[in-house]
Image (cartoon, rainbow over all chains, first blue to last red; front, side, top):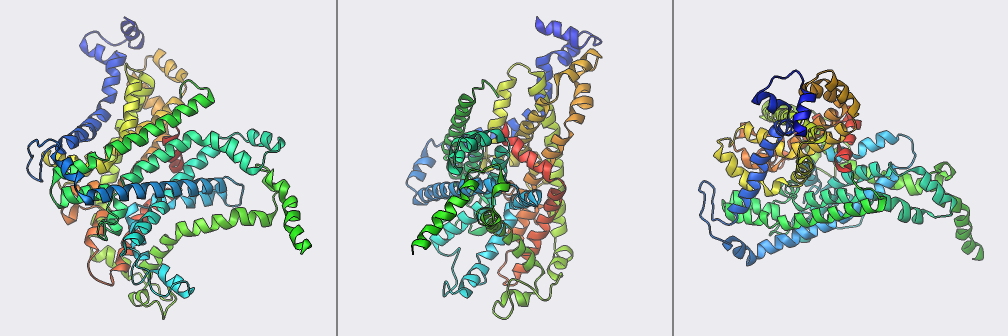
Length: 317
Length: 304
């Protein structure tokens, strides 16, 4: 009934009939406005997401839609040591890189929040690694990590710290640390700039009050800055963890998963099995296996947000 | 010895006021700021920027100097050359790849922004039944990473007959861009006062007129932010372009560089770095003009 009243109020000049109803009813109008976005997201996101889970239960190969084989792909993966190695690598990569990104990013945000000359310029420059496409900066890292001509090896050698060149990407553990370093390098600007935006919303009066009460720097950080930042930290770190966990491009450029699968992440392994090896079903099973981890990250962020609302006594938004 | 022992204590008490002066930085002494602020900031900045310096330097270094680290100082070049860049731009398919990337990025971004403006307006202002749920679903869509979609999407793209055409990318990139820009624009639309819309409604404007004549002009900063950020995301995308495009002339810059430039040639570094540099410059220049919008886009999307 309200719809009818509203229609009369909002579209007094419109005629009657179906078209007028469709053009004026709030719900129908909403549906029309949502249509383009919904079409894209359903056709190219929701449907493939469901299809991916379905494919993981089939023996599909490139060019032929397989038949249903139940959990066979997953059983096969459970016995596959390369898959478990990739799970280990992904967890290591995500946890180390995210922790360091958070620590240095927060530190950098605190530094950038200080008053200094050329503040705007410095802040703008910090974001550049985030602007440049990952693949292109990864290529620069590839050259920096070159076994023979690495400038890092050269500098360390001339400083007298090492005697021979470091084989950054040829040795399993060196390769792991190298790709983690490149990922951290790429991720810090995002964490720092978003946390800086959070820092700027903290009212200065809180700091002044704490200073008058005799709080020291650490107490101010621990009891004012950190609690005020918690909500934005929760979101930033969810994104950071999510994108690190599903990282593909950096690894693909630097090592392609090698040496001997030492840097094989779940995303790169699924690409290798599904596209290069043409076992779509198995690849889909690997990428579906990432979903529980992603859900976990989202839930953690959700509860982080809930805590914020409770702390600030807000009911919504 | 006692003096020495007393000294740090003395300096500690002297510096103590500085400790209590967060937000009153003028009370801090310069040497202290040098150690606590400028030095760490300088180190971080050098680490963040060095790869770009190295990229640029390699792109303009002659090959002979590039590989002889002992005879020439590797941190500088005495004879800069444009040979790598000229070779790249005039003797390879690089301009074609740049054009592909640009075309895909512009079309996908434009489509996404149009869809997002409509969706964001509907969610924020039409408040149709279930609008909150739709908003939440869009946020969730934002969290679905391309790495778990590329396998099923490749078979979808194949079924629709889009494989190895620019449309494969133009139609799939919006799945990354729409959730982000809808979420960002919802924030901007919420800030526009209801009264403006109510006045327009009373004057007999339709919803469509309100959107195009009032909401969109007022949200221009948000649209610019969304546009540049989406453009950058498109330029950065890799896994879809790698999977859905197979012929050389349809590739985008990131994929083409990785697949076409990497041969066994020991002298490839110059042209690789030139390729990386030319692929990054358009974005860096765009960024330089719109820093504020860019930061607003990045922080706006996580703030909500």
